[in-house]
Length: 176
Image (cartoon, rainbow, N blue to C red; front, side, top):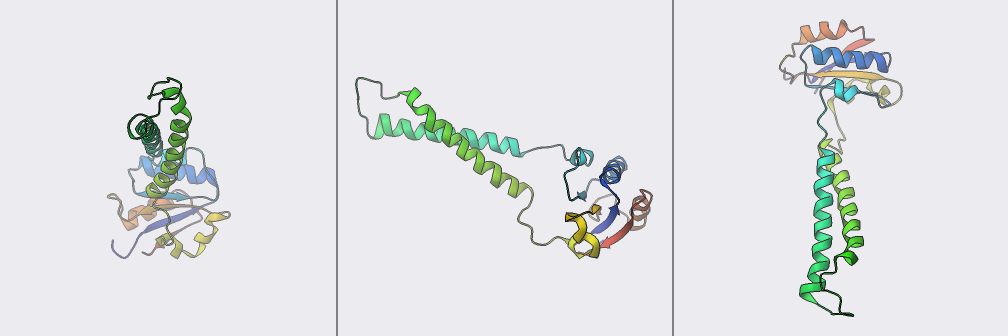
């Protein structure tokens, strides 16, 4: 439906929100989101968000950082400006470990930050649920669950009946 972003249900507490998310996933809904003022254990997993890509991004960035740190030191010590100090080999890898480690940590930290921002779609100054009057309580004491109209199983009347069957405080239309 072009004139509706989705339906937003408000619940009394975290347990009710978690039950609603599990019920919606069991019912076949996949385009949904939950909003809570605090972290709720297993909420994202109950909605089917069990793929964690940030650790993979962090590992790749750490390996890139470590390889570039080692490669830079090798290039400087063995190729660009070789100095034979005390007969040590030009590729003295034990002395390269601190910089290699530090660049691995630095690149992984930047990868974690940038990957998290990109995968979460942040910064996001506007979202359609901001149009619902009571949604401002989501950062204080409100527990909200939204099923988006883009969901293949979304039908306004059926989805509204489904959400009302979960005993929310109320169900609101979310305008785009």
